[in-house]
Length: 335
Figure 1 (tube, helix red, strand yellow):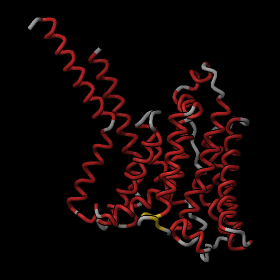
Figure 2 (figure 1 turned 180 degrees about the vertical axis):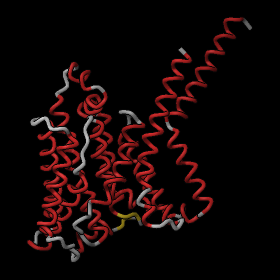
Figure 3 (figure 1 turned 135 degrees about the vertical axis):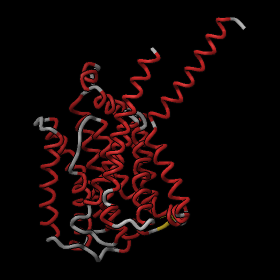
């Protein structure tokens, strides 16, 4: 064997080794969580039972819509803190129109979704036309919606819901709850939008490098506004299906979505770094809800269980920071 061929084989071996190392570093957080699941399943076999997996899918589906919307805003370089109350207000408005006014289920649901779209557009206009920082703008909207929620409901839960409405959250098809089907449909639409359309690619371009996007002719205002509109459009679905599933619409119905949605969206946008963020967000949702479910099975107190999504969020950010650092050092070493 010649010296040249020997060097070539060594380079290929190093290249393969670097590719494997890069993969392991980049997706270390998923590998870490996989081993946690294996340990939980060994300790408590009920964790992987069909009934328990169905429960995980159900809870994941309810938080998926706000998570998809939030991940799109983050991918565009923004942040939306108002999505829990958009979800809550959409649910409360829908149930109010059905119970107090007597409108049909579909009119109530459509009204709740449309009001979310309007609120999302309002957030987007605050950011793109008044140049208010997205954190401040959506924080203000969060507080405003909180007041509207109490005004609309009088601080009371709405518990006598139409059966057709409850079917959206409690109904089954082939022994699978309806929210799971809704999640699958919205996931496909969001994935195709972000990965296969010009607007989706421009959203990730703006979030990745806004100056490069501007020089490329991307309409920054329009893309930013679009991301907030999508988040506003999707968020009420979580609140509406949560109300249908629980058989009641509480004034604080959106609060449970805040931390899990942030954790899932950060996993989708931070780790996947602009590519397949909707798929990454879906993984994030299932990871977060699986850990929350496992902590319940293992008898962890409710107070501690509330900490789990926050731990996942911080672990994701920490893993991403050290993964980037390790990857950059590896590139310097191999160059």
